[in-house]
Amino acid sequence: MRHLILGAGNMIQALTPPFIKSAQGDLFSVYTPTGKSAESFARSQGITQQRELVDLNDVNFLWLGMKPQQVSGVAKSLSDFDFSKTVIVSLLAGVESERLSKLFDCPSVIRIMPNTPSLVGIGVNGIFFSSSVDEERKSYFLKHFSQSVKDGKNYILDREDQIDLITPYSGSGPAYFFEMARILSEDLARRGFDKTEALELVSLTMKGAAQMLIESDDSAEVLRNKVTSKGGVTFEALKVLEENQLSSIMERAIDAALKRNNELKEV
Image 1 (cartoon, rainbow, N blue to C red):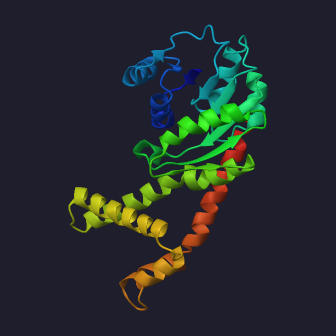
Image 2 (tube, helix red, strand yellow):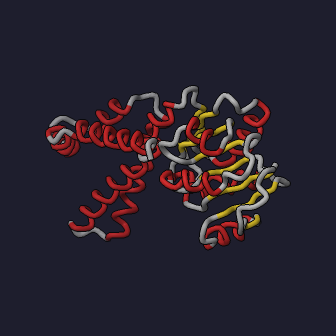
Image 3 (tube, helix red, strand yellow):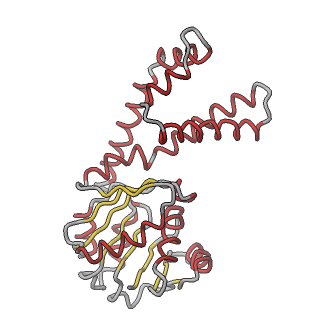
């Protein structure tokens, strides 16, 4: 199998190395317009840097890792090549398989909605296969892509609109936790705690709470209540969050993310 990776950003660098290692014997090359990040990534993975976009008709899997706004221009630059038997592997938010098929004149598309914890092997990936991806290529892809998650999970989605649905949760979700960690750790440091240890303390607290959610049969609400005594410290903190409508704030944030995701479909 021959793979061409377009782009060398964080998600490509998180998801493809385990795939490359698993699919030993296959041919992998990576291309970026300036060549700088492609050169570095190619060297780190022992693969080829594609310096020019030539001789691509025999590419079996074309990985798209550029920004969604750039995909039309990239497709135009590749219009001379025949991708009718190629499988597009897209990490682009908001760009539907039908549009990708038209842009690249390629019926077979795999869409992935990854998240950045893939960098540490705890990624959550939503995967959708267009109907033109046959069982042989689907099996091949899942066999090797499964190596990209150690303690995370790949979710095979029946409908493409589920990719859009999960994007603000799993795709954007880590940013919400990072922002909460920033707020809590900076507040703790402001009150006199060591800055480095403050971030460590908050991070480990979040890690422990997440692990409890995963391992416990209790719901998030029940686990929350087990930490909370009426009139106690946690109770008063949660009371402020409720009074300031944290639930409503998060719902509005998700609505905004979904709206932007839909806007990207038109770019």
